[in-house]
Image (cartoon, rainbow, N blue to C red; front, side, top):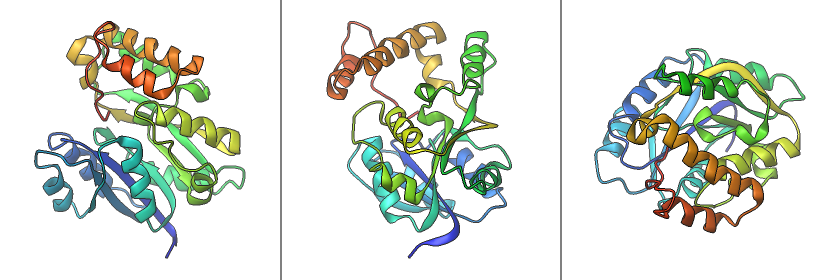
Length: 237
């Protein structure tokens, strides 16, 4: 049964006990009605316990961000889906902003702008780039929302090991009604801390270029784990 006034917030997790709590507490301050679904990829820490303590419906799915988010969408009862990373904080009126955007009949999906929890100049510049209405920069750490009908019309997330978020945004944009919100989410810069902002961004650019060239997603994932560009195992954020 679908509840037309409900926003289903779907969060994929994998060993996120240290980040998930803050994200869920921020969600609890939202004024819009929502249901909270955490889809866990068999974490080995206390992620599921943290989710349960905040009233989330906790599901398990095979490890893989795309498959986890699709599983969450299958279980969701809202008319609107918001896919959110475990270390991304909505603005205080984030759900209301989504609702207002979708009141426009020409809008059926969209994304927020991005800011990091670190003022490093390079990260600030990268965040400012998300002000540009360019669909190929719509990574999942910005938060992605869609009406159920639009999400189902494009087939949900492609179950790729990498860049499923960019591909969903591109398909939703082609479907029509994609909107870039002025409000910004705040996401963790932890993956940039692990190897430095410049090095991480060069790795991102290397992989993103392959995606834009149409390299097979499995091959891109292999490059991600190839020691040549020295990337780490893909975090969920």
